[in-house]
Structures are given as structure tokens and as C-alpha cells.
Length: 304
Image (cartoon, rainbow, N blue to C red; front, side, top):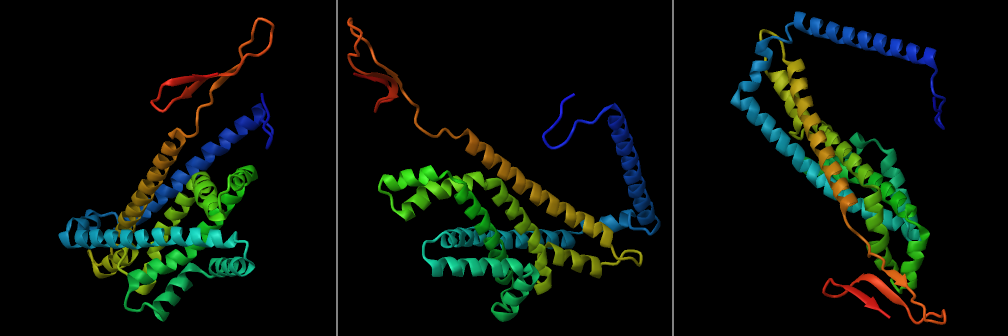
């Protein structure tokens, strides 16, 4: 039996008790799910007619248009948040105090304001006739501030020796940031960056407040304007639209995992050669032989 740094390994009695708790908890959860299904069935929400509405071409087309509108807003917001995040992260690390203070104030302000208020304010104040751009701009501002803090943390995590070595080679601060610090920060923080992009995708649902025809707004219109046997198909609509959100988030997460694996498999760096100092008959070194380095044509070279 081994113990972890965070907790002691459970003994035989604790193992049995934990298994009992797991079984009881699972049974309670299954009972609640069964109860919910029975109640929905008694109210007619699980009838075939409630789900048959999605076979209508008009409703399918509305959902397809909503998916496209959601992806448009997400694409604009993703690009905008990443660009703004890079700018704010660099500005917050600036040696110039006014620039650093302005970036810090911007980040703290819009991270403190609820995203829904930001989107609504942008729509009312500037882009009343362009709801898609209002949604994308609001998402870009808030998520850009979050991405800036993520990138700043990644830059600060790069060993200080690499920065000092780059300056010793004569690189400017801009070159050091662009070629040494930022690439490593993005690589280290990629899972967090992608996770925030998933949040951005889900936050497009806030577009309903400004009447943007994304998935949630379309689901509300479908459920409230379609009547089946005197009932509105809210349950079936929520299940279908929710499944679409889950599928899009899973695809984005799968893309992030694929990118991360490719980054780990990337061959970077220069292979070090083997230094051999041959000895003469009197025991002194006659020279240095370096093997294992690739020449211009890819062949192994040896120098003395």
C-alpha cells in the first residue's frame, strides 16, 4: 500500500466504504434520471411527434443557418481575441509605464464587467444595425483580456536565461519577444488557450440578447412558434440544439489535442556531436575530433 503526497492511501475498510458510496450514488443518479424521463413522458414531451418536427426542411434549414451564424461569430471572436490578447500581453510587459498601466486598466476593467453587459453596450452604443459584429466585438474584448493573462503567464514562465542569452546575441526586445518568448509561451499555454476558445464558442449563445440569429435564438424561435398537440417542443429543441453545441465543442477540443500532439512530435533543436580528444604516444592530446555533426549535404563530418 502506497501513500500519495496529497492524501493517504485508503485502507481495506475505506475501500469498501468508498465502493458502497459509489454504488449508492450511482443508483440515486439513475433513479433521478428515470424519474425525469417518466415525468417528461407523462407530459407528452417524449412523443414521436415532438421530435418529428426536425424532419421538416424549413426547421432543418433554420438550424443550419443558425450553425453557420454561430460559427461566423465565433471565427471573428476567436481571431479578434487572440490578436487582442497578444497586443495586451505585450503591452502589459512593456518597459514604458503608461503603456503598461493602460493595458492593465483595460484588462482589469473588461474582466470585471459581465460579458452580457459588454455585448449589449457595444450593440446599443455603436453597432445597433450589425448584431454579428457587436457580438464578435464583445466576445473579442472579454476573451482577449483573458487570453492576454494566459499569454503573460506563459511568457513569464520561460526561463530567464533564454531571454538573457537572446539579448547577449544582440537581438532587440521585439525580436526576443517575437522569436524566443512568444512561441514558447503559446506552445506551453496552448491547452489553456484552446479551452478559452471553447468558452468563446459557447458564449456566442449570448447573442440572443441582441437578436442575433445564432443557435440559441433560433432554438427559442422554433420552440415558441411550433405547437404540437397543444404543447411547445421545448424539451426536444433543447436536446437537439444542446447536442449540436456539444458536438462543436468536442470537435474544437479534438483539434486542440491534435495540434498539441503535433507540437510534441516536432523535431526541434540541433543534435550535439561527440567530442573525442585523441592522445599521442606521450599521453598528450593531439587535437579535437568532433563527430556526429551533419555537413551541408547531410553527411556526417569529422574535424580535427
